[in-house]
Image (cartoon, rainbow, N blue to C red):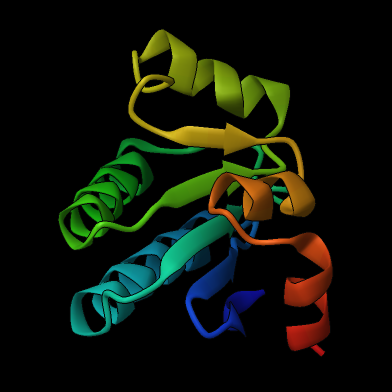
Length: 120
């Protein structure tokens, strides 16, 4: 878990399952992007089962920060139940979703093999 650069201009965020740690992680991502907004952000939801309103608020803030800087936020690995929350709340039009890390990299215009080589 954590915030990692997988290329010079792509940050990977692996969200923890536990609510408070997840909220802290989202807040930290917003601070990183506020200070260094020259990267796209890929967010791995594979450990997340449910989101609270605070987490969604932090995601909206992050989305706005990245939009203003001309960068993308891609959410991937999301459980069906979690994605349904976004759809019901009308947020499926706000965020970009991908099934997995490779698809998320494609969504920001990066190739999976280049990014995988950079993450080791």
